[in-house]
Amino acid sequence: MDRRELLADERGTLHKEAELRVALVYPSPYRAAMSSLGYQQIYRTLHGMPGVAADRAMLPDEGTPTGPGRGLVTLETGQPVGGYPLLAYSVAYELEIAGVVETLERSNIPVLAADRDRRHPMVIAGGPLTFSNPAPLAPFFDVVILGEGEELICELVEIGRDLGFDRERVWAALAGKPGYYLPHLHGETIPPVAQVADALLPARSVIATPNTELADMFMTEAARGCSRGCTYCVMRRSTNGGMRIVPRETIIAGIPEGTRRVGLVGAAVTDHPDIAAIVRDVVDGGREVGISSLRADKLTDELVGLLARGGYRTLTVAADGASERMRRVVERSTRASDLIRSAQFAATHRLHTLKVYMMLGVPGETDADVDELVQLSKELAAIHPRVAYGLAPFVAKRNTPLDGSPFAGISLVEGRLARLDKGLRAAGLHDKVKVRPTSARWAWIEYMLAQGESKAGLAVMDAHHAGGTFAAYKAAFKARGVEPTGPRARVPSSQELIALKRQRLATL
Image (cartoon, rainbow, N blue to C red; front, side):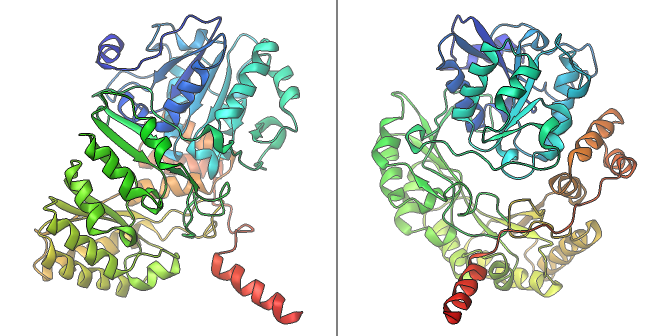
C-alpha cells in the first residue's frame, strides 16, 4: 500500500501546521510501527509541543527495492526524510538495527554519525532497546534517550530548536544531564535510564488502523514496569521503580467514544489489583479486549470468562522454563499447576487454543527438563485439544541478573527442539501440541548484539550490506572482532538480596 492508502485507512491521525517538523522514524514496516504503543506515545507527545509536529516514516515492506537513492518520505507530507532537521528513531530490539541502516541509506544520510556534518539532520534514538543495551546504536546516532522518553524528547527538541540543531552545541547543552547517552562522550559506558513522572501515565495510542498486527485496537497502559523478579527480564521490579499502577477509572475514562477494540498494555497487566473490574468495564461497554501479558498464576475463572466475552479465542500465558526446576532457576512464579489450571479455564470457556511461551537453552537446563515438558504436554492435551508452544532460545540481556550468561549454542537448542518433537510424537501428541520455535540462528545474532558493544553495530551495517543473511552476520562479527563482553557486575536476585540482609543482621 502507498502512503495515501495507509493514511486513508487511519482514524485519529494528527494534522498540524508547525514551524518545526520532526521525522519520527521506525526501523520496521508500518504494521509493526503502528502496533508500538511507545512510538504512538512519542507521536502524541511531539504534537503536544507548541510549534512542533511529528511526521512518521517507516521501513518499507519487504520486497521494496533497497539501497542508496531509494527515497524515504514521511506519511503525513510525502517529504523526503533527509530534509528534516531532526530524525527521531524508536528502536524496539536488536534485530531492528539493520532497519536503522536501511532507513538512513534510503534518506541519503550518511549511516555513521562520524561521517555527518552540519549539512545533515541531527539523528537521535530512543525506545525499548535502550533499557538493556543501546551500545550497538552508538555508531549511528548523535544522541540516545535512555528509558522512558516522554519528558526528555521534549527537552531535547527545545534545546535543539534554540541551538539550530547544531550537534556540537546540543552536545554541550546535554552533557551531564541524566537520561542521555552521548556516544562521542560516553563511549561504551551507558548512563542510567530515565523515568517519567507518574502524572504522565498512561501512554495511550493515537491512531487506529486495520493495517497493523493489532487491527483497529486502541491501546492503553494498565501499568508500567513489573513487580516480579524474573532474572532474565529487563523490565523486572528493580527497573525504574518497579510496577506503577494506573487507576481503573483513569484507564476507562481514557477510552475514546466509539472504540471497538481495547488493548491493555504492560509488562504484567494481570498483576493489576483491579484487572477483572477493568476488563468487565471494557466488555460491558460492548467492546473487545486484549491483554499484552497474561500471568498463569493470576488467572481466575471470572477473568477468563470476561476475556472470552471480550473476543478472546486464544489464551496465551508464559511459562518461560521448560520444567518446574528451570522456572525456579529464573525466579518465574508460574508452576505446572498454574498451566494446568489455565488449560482448564480455556476448555471451560471454549477458547480455541491454549498458547504457552517458553524458553530453551536457559543456563543449567538439561535434557531431563525437556522430558518434563513432554510429560506436562500430556496433561495439558488431556484437558484442551489444541495446545501451542511458542519456544524461543534464551538470550541474556544486559541490566538483568543473567547478564553475561553464555548462549547455549545453536546445535544444542536445535537438539532440544528435536528431543521435544520426538517426545511429543512418541506420546501421540504431535497433532495436538504444536511447536512454533524461534530460529536458533537469529537468536544467536540477537545474543551477540545484546551482549556486544558499539562495534557490534558496525557489524550489523556490514552484514546488511552483504545481504543480511546468517552467514553475512557471522562473517561480519568475526571481521569486526565482536565477542560477548562476558560477565559484568550484575544485579543481585531477590533471593541473593534476602541472603545478604540475613548475613548482615547476623553480624550485628
